[in-house]
Each structure stands twice: as structure tokens, then as C-alpha cells.
Amino acid sequence: MIGALATLIRRELMLAFGLGGGTRGSAGFVMPIIFFLAVATIYPFAVGPDAQLLGRTGGGVIWVAALLASILPIDRLVQADVDQGMIDQYVVRGLSEELIVLAKTIGHWLSFGPPLMLAAVISAGLLGQSAEQLMIIEIGLACATPALAALGVMIASLTAGLRHGAALGGLLLLPLAVPLLIFGAGSLTPGSQNGLLLLAAASLLLTVICPIAAGAAIRAGRE
Amino acid sequence: MAHDAAQTKGFDAGAALECTGLACVRGGRMLFRGVSFALDAGEALHVTGPNGMGKSSLIRVLAGLLPAYAGEVTATGRMALADERVALDAGQPLARALMHWTRLDGSADADIAGALNAVDLPHLADVPVRFLSTGQRKRALLARISLSRAPIWLLDEPANGLDTASIERLGAIMANHRANGGIVLAASHQPLPLNGAQTLPLAEFVPAAVPEEPA
Image (cartoon, rainbow over the protein chains, first blue to last red):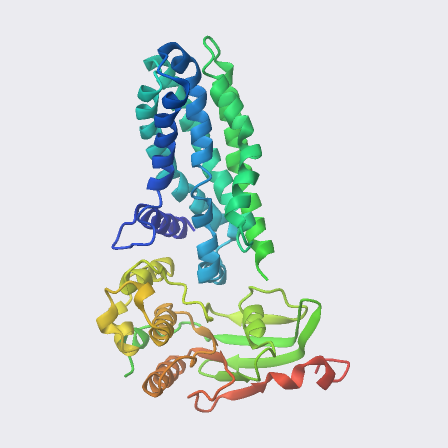
């Protein structure tokens, strides 16, 4: 079981990072990161270079950008595997749908969370965040990105097989991710520790529930 | 023509595939009912019938991908499924895409080159799957099946898109699999190179043509 999980994760990573001579997913993990950085880059153009204003609002912008960036990979997470018959092949081999989506969640997080946390360092610089604020942002993203990855895989599983599923995916993800945004951005308020704790709790809950829901969605979607 | 990977597998337990009184309903319509057969090691079954008769559904029910409306499937041994989808990563070179499945099947030592030889694709091992033609994909799929080391093969239209030489190769690979104690269940509207196979004309099992009680 663990061996199968490792094999599945290995494939997810190869696709996301475009390794092993693959070409399909070569830009897979890059696009959300570029998008995330682009938001941080254009925000100062919109509100002006006032360092105080940027310092006060920049953390929130980083959180909004992280949420929006997590929408981008949704359409490549599950749909292609259903179309290609990969999922059916796993099921014929006796792997449960939950295990399949768990592997997808872990693989997706590895190609999304750490790169996003690296990019957040650049974003924080562009948005005039102090070192302290950056630290809280990084801890917050470390807590929240597993939940964002799990949500992404769940929504991708739900919308696999639907036309215009990708557009729908964004609409479905945002309301579910709002707790992460509130507690994540809220933890940046000076002198509040509870934001991060609540963020971690919300993230844990989503990370546990989502693979179960995603597995059920894939099972139900198979005709 | 008999490839090396198959010769080394030799399935330990006697494989068997049996179903009794199988019925399938899709979209509110009963496709077939009362389908029963039993296959032992080395045997083969050719499911025949025109398009839309439920051949693919039967295979998916046997594979456990669709719930049976009635009846039971008993399989001894693992199954390998080949439907119209190749299930190989389009962006990966063929050999590497096959390696994903051999890893998953715990046969990392499998002879991928030998399996590609058997389907006459050794020259495409390093070519990404997306550049393969329809017939080449079908042969790559066959290589995936023979690498799976599963005793029970469920093949949906295995000869579709294959040229005459490839159909002969398909026959040789299936014969070799059966000689090793494997089971082949193939659904096709066209003749298949399956010597001594039982035939299951699915048209006889559509509800209008069978009595009330399944046989």
C-alpha cells in the first residue's frame, strides 16, 4: 500500500515538475507561482508606492493571491487521469479512490506549497512586509497550503467530467477556502497568536476531509 | 514471437474467472441479463455482438468498475484491463510510461524491452506516447497488459486499429499468455485470433430475447 502510494506520488511529481523527459506538465507547477508573483508585482502599481499603506495591506494581498493561485492547477489535477483511464486502471488494481486522491493531494502540495512559500519571500519584499510579518506569512502558508492542495484535488474530482469544470472549480474553491483567508490574514494583526492556531485547525480539518470527499466524488462520477 | 517477459511469469495459483446470472442496467435500460460463464486457466472467451450491445459494460462489470445489477463475479487472480484508453502518460516516453505500471504492479524487473519487441515497437521506446498512431497506441496498450503479470486479461476490442501483421502478433501474445496458465476474455465485433475459445454472443442475453428467469 505504501509502495503504491509512493509510486503514485512519484508520478504526480514527474508530471508537475515535467521531469523524466515528460513534456505535458512542464509548466504545471510554474503557472500558479508566476500568477502569485504577478499579483504582488502589480498591486503597488494600483495603490501607489506608499510604504506604510503597502506594509499594512500587503499581507492580505499575499493571502488573496495565494488563494487565487491555488485555483489555477485545478483543471490538470484529475480530469486528464479520468479521460486517459488511469483512475480505472488503479481501481482495477485494487487501489481505493481515497488512496489515489491522497497521493494526488500530497503530490500537488509538494509542487505547490514549497514553491509558493519561496515566492512569498519575493512577494513580501515587493509589498513592503517586515521580517516579522514575513515570518508569520510563511508559517501561515505552511499551515494553509496543504488544505489548499486538498481542496484543489477535491474540487478537481468533483468537476471531472463536467464541461467548463475549470471555471466552476474556482467558484467552488473560494468559499471553502475563506476560513483559511480569514485566519491567515487575521494572524498578521500585531499581537495575535490565535489566528495561526485557528488557521492550523481549519487547515487540518480540510486536509483530512477533502481526500474522503474526493474519493467519493470519483467513485460517484464513474459510470 | 513469444516474448521473454511472458515466459518467466508462470502464475502460481490456478487462475479462474466465473460469473453467474450477471445483469447490467445502464441509463435505466437493461443491457443484458443471465450472463453466466466459467473460465479456467488457459481458457479464453470471445464476447461477440454488434455495437451498443453492452460488451464494454460487461467488461467493466467484470473488472469491478461498474456495479452488477444482478449476479456475481468470482475471480481468482489479478485482472488486467485494456479498454479504448491507453492509460499511458501522453508526455512521457513510452518505456517510461510503461514503467509507471510495472512499478505499481511490483514487477519493476519486468522486461519492458522484451514486451515492446513482442508488439514490434522497440524503436519507439523513447518516443513520447502522444506521438504514437492509433495502431501503435493499441500495441503499446498490449505491452502494458502483458507486463502486468495479471493472469486474467480483459480486452475490449483488442484488434481495433491493428493491421494484419499486428493482429497475428496479438494472437501470438494471447496464445502465449494462455499457455502460461492465463485467461483471456476479449470482447470484439470482429473475428479474433483466439484458437479454441468459447464464444458468448451477447445479443442472446438482451432482455427481450431471454425468458423471465436467468439461466
